[in-house]
Length: 296
Length: 299
Image (cartoon, rainbow over all chains, first blue to last red; front, side):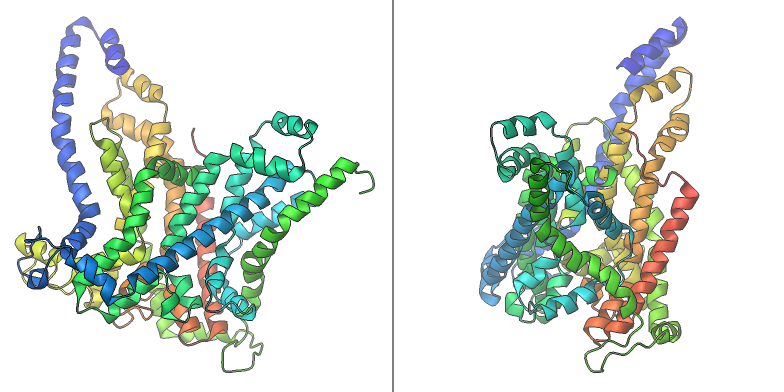
């Protein structure tokens, strides 16, 4: 509004009306151009998932009907129930929940514990340790997966969920993010706690960690997404398909059960529901975190 | 050390105790692979043989390995999606930067592919790409093709199909970064230019784009690295051999295949190293040509 006002103020008197008319015409027309574009993009982005959902709600022959049936008629939830019988879906869901909680929990614990001293405590060798951590981000990691696989085997963790979670139980990125957050806390908080006789660990746990809650939330969201969606590392480390989380399980069921696509579709829809719920509830945090991660 | 006070010494002890578990894990799974990956590339480390230092043999082998050549070619071809992603995501950011009712819904909708797993995305897309699938249906309806196409089986189209999935899944992410970029440009600048008589296009060209440049550089760097590294989409859609007939195989997928199917860890490490070197060269060049490196930004 200030834009239009400024222009009107500066425009010669005879042009004022012209600007106004042109502007209001544009303003009125904009939605008619923009909404179709927005809707078209929404169809392109959500389309494949909606088509998958539509397939999961179809019965028998309708699945492969040509021309394709966009809205299932009649819709059925049978596939969503049957898929639990045809594959041990609950089992895979339990594995995924276990892996995700394990991984996110360890990250939270280890990343705050590592970031805090680097941000707030004085000790010899601090800069050297920090430099060592920074350097891992710059140097290319050529044999990452291979060396980690050998290490996991040597530690006797092959075919265990600990083997899946441990290599990503701490991430340099999270340490940076949390360190940055810890640095911004005013020193007075710490001093007054110390004067009141709080021990170092107490200060960390009861004062510092609660103060960096937004950064903690970002870490939890990122890690939840990363662990829930993880694919290749579980495939490498886990030998028994029984131990697979949802991603790898669906990947292999997709090749084994290709003849019954509605089940695969239903299973896939079920696998994305938790992450979608988390995303929709925390979308603001999610998007800010994503943008902040790149900018910051 | 002796000059440290009692409090300082206690604090240092506490700091080391806190750092210990995290540092140990970082050392084992982040630092060690970097240090160990390099010498591994010069050995024949595998499951069957005793490990020997074989010098440049793996590199010579990679040089003469036609499959690796093909994989590398596909990885470099994959970089072609970078300008597509950047241009489309900037246009999308401009589109969702309008103040309209329900705009928030659209922003969230475009971001959904970013948060869902690649396995789910790949299963959905394979279903879309089927010969009897919905994409063929629309293309036939629109009269763009006469016969249904098997997007997953045609060697000339398979890689394009995977690239489309990468673009689709990544656009929302870059759109959000550009949206943040657009919103961080002070509105007064554009207003001032308008008052000085600049037209809409001129404002975009002379103000919006230069101020958005740091974001463009950063996003390009990220997507170039992602493109050369591409793994998940190929693996879930076309398997570890990059079917059909290696037509979608990329260098990272080939490295996986050599390591975890053929169990030739040494050779796989060499391939990983070569990819890492290419990425390093590309990023150094990008930083060089852009000077500011894309890491500065406007708040």
